[in-house]
Length: 183
Image 1 (cartoon, rainbow, N blue to C red):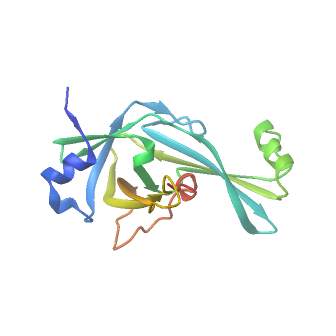
Image 2: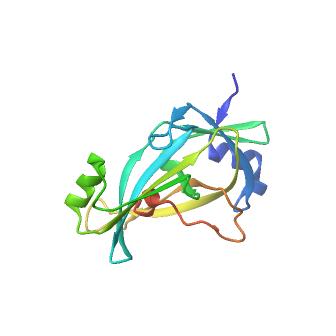
């Protein structure tokens, strides 16, 4: 069994990876994606809401919650929960629907939102496929315990994962699931 390490441990051993892109592969529990029914390590389903040709928002659908294992240089294996990653990947599958759709959950979306088109997007991380990675520190503040104290400043290391190089920034948008994340 391969020893799992944290992002923090990886940076202690390989400080040159700080804020510099590197190549990884995915490992972890094999799942089946809900739309394409493809074997994967992680999936996200989101719905873009469109009215009169304009994107007016998005709704998160189903997301896998199993931890992923990131493999770097066939030597380092890092286990990460979905709260420690950010995905900058292209949709694996894209389906467009109108009100005429006869799929129940799609009809429910049209019933709940004033839209004329719905785009279902499925994002996947696939086992053994190479991805571009970047370790980023996210600084956040927690409110003080009382009015006389200052806010608590904390940080967390996140792994940005992309199917395109970071040159010098992501070439693909952050997936809708992570766009609303705050600390």
